[in-house]
Image (cartoon, rainbow, N blue to C red; front, side):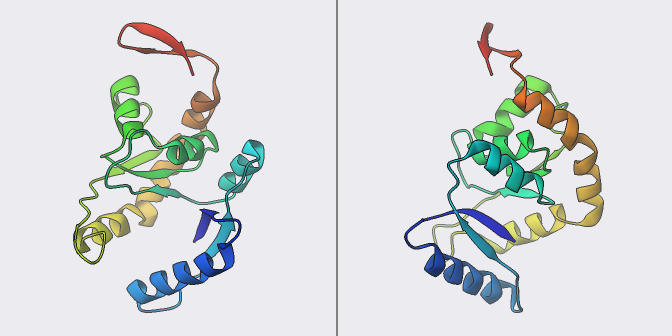
Length: 161
């Protein structure tokens, strides 16, 4: 697992914490690579394009730029239905934009752990090879659409992407 966005000054400790978290829940070794936040947008897209899948599993997300960047990099995305990005894709493209996107319900928890066992099961199912194959089919087209300067229409007004 490759995690981008760690604090520049504390990325080594954050990477260790991520590794311990992943191994604790998986109850086995998990290869977790942590990287600091990238200012270079082209570099970020290059990094993302080398990945098999991106996850944006927020319990609530106003838009979700990380997911949009994954789509722009033509990487299949597993995204929470509780995000503005999913709503944009669903409402604007009526399924077209969701060809490389697998929406999942992330319920979260206010308990000690910020997720529920059902959340883990849902994401695990979305990560199966058959699901990834379906996601990969649509990722190239939608990635080009995400980078397109063509206008989108929201609420009857055209706005530049």
